Image (cartoon, rainbow, N blue to C red; front, side, top):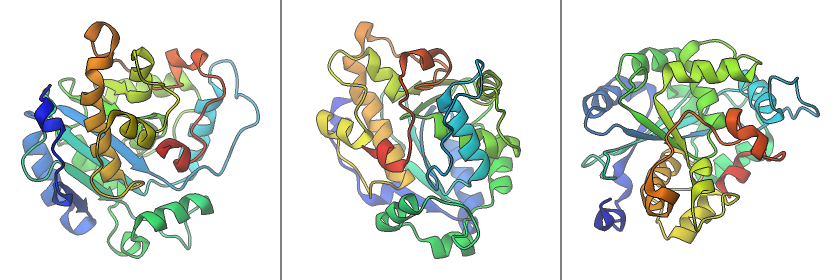
Amino acid sequence: INAEYMGIMSGDDCIVDVWRSNLYEEMEKISNLIDRYPIVSIDTEFPGVVVTPLVDSGEDSSRMWTTICKNVNLLKIIQLGLTLADNTGAHPPGTSTWQFNFKFNVDVDIYAPESLELLYQAGVDFDRHLKDGVDGMEFAELLITSGVVLNEANRWVAFHSGYDFAYLVKILTNRELPENENEFLEELGSWFGDICDLKYLIKASQTVDHRVGLNQLASSLQVGRVGPAHQAGSDSLLTSRLFFRLLPHVKGGSVPFSRILYGLGQDAHEILDDHPAHIQARGG
């Protein structure tokens, strides 16, 4: 790990906003970099949670998955943040983070008011999302051919990532998510290489409480943020930096890359009704 690099605060110009008007140009840049920077950290912003199931959908799916599935199938993604790094934690020179801004119409699309207000306060430009937002199908076609997904050489990092990967799988497949949790996890494995969910990682940490939110974790580890909280680009860059800062704290020194998402599948039995109810809880 390059400790000096981790202490450097880059300017906001390391994050680029991607709209429909510059989508092809920026996806080509990512495709050209992915072989040298195969650690992909992501974050999504979405319109909150509008459905909360009172009971589990059955023995094959946890309440957390039922909540994620029902909400993601009803709602649209607003932003995806994607940050590239190499195995030492170094980012590409210049732009390291791409913030994809998807088409979203506040007059038509469903949302939780408190979540949308949080995004307004964070500076999300919903007028531009309507006029120049990225089309999900167009984005999926480019992502599939970019070398970013369907590439076992890449490793993925996220924080409390059930919603993040659920929205990505929905976009990539262009269909509703399966109600069965195991079916989703199988589909996840077909698109993505190994995944490290930071919430799952810090369970193995000797010093960090896995119940903290992203901002609390950054504060406790003294990792600085670039850009505004509750925007996906800034959060994905912070997630990338936190991942490399956390590595020395992991018991045994090995990174538990797997396809385990915090609170889902293999991890579900260890979580007691701790689903991410809204964006605020994720940001901590």
